[in-house]
Amino acid sequence: MRVIEFREALREALNEEMRRDPNVFLMGEEVAEYNGAYKVSKGMLAEFGPKRVIDTPIAELGFAGIGVGAAMNGLRPVVEFMTFNFSLVAIDQIINSAAKILSMSGGQYSAPIVFRGPTASAGMLSSQHSQAFENWYANCPGLKVIVPSNGYDAKGLLKSAIRDNDPVIFMESEQMYGDKMEVPEEEYIIPIGVADIKKQGNDVTIVSFGKIMKVALAAAAELEKEGISAEVIDLRTVRPIDYAAIIESVKKTNRLVIVEEAWPLASISGEIAFHVQKNAFDYLDAPIRRITTADVPLPYAPTLIEASLPNPTKVIQAVKDVMYRS
Image (cartoon, rainbow, N blue to C red; front, side, top):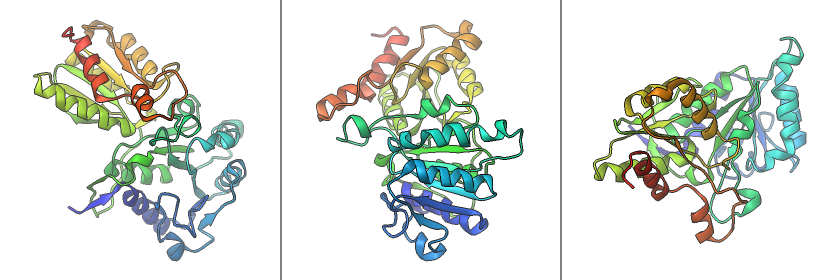
């Protein structure tokens, strides 16, 4: 099977869906003439033309609103944010228009739109360009929120997102665009809301999503060397969350560690912990542990970034804590 980059997997999904459905189009800052800030849309302007690959001004609120209006009128826009940090400028259109229009119109209008782009930290970008907003958007009814961890999942999930009749938030990572993996040439889709067990295990369940799956899997590999068998679950989507997959795993392992790149208050990990204690309390042999980003704006200095973000060492320690091996 051929090996391609994460960005190429996204590009293939966009190309395939735009060839399949003439109502699909891409818009955002630098997506056309510049081939995309991260080269996801490379070559798309030449194939689809300026009416379907549209460069926008630096005005997220404006072009997000245009996208929502286009979706309400039968088109299927894909709106790219250069970073989801900038989506805060457009959050009124995302929350108060796209997410609510189906309900407010009594089912007369829908907004089949995808908002996609990179999220969370990406090196020394400091406080205003390093934030993870998955839990913010997952809090809003009417939205679906996808956070893939690899190119295979990203392609299948983006195709599903474009075909979905609800507004979808599709969150990537700048630090993953160059990642390579095997991706089939034949068409496939991955259903929204279904988690994936990336590694089978018996002693502890580790749950994560997005680029932090690298941290979870690295920790699991180190734990394996010490005789600790960790089951690693990739949520893939955080609205809806596949609670059933997590609970079934906890019933087997009796221990749970959740890892995410977000501030701790009102986080995805907190929501998962609530559901597990509610529905699988009797199976737990230890308190649930969470590893999150430190409750501070992300610093600029590399040493402070390392101290703030989840890393394998923190996950390994949390696993040993729930196994009473500290």
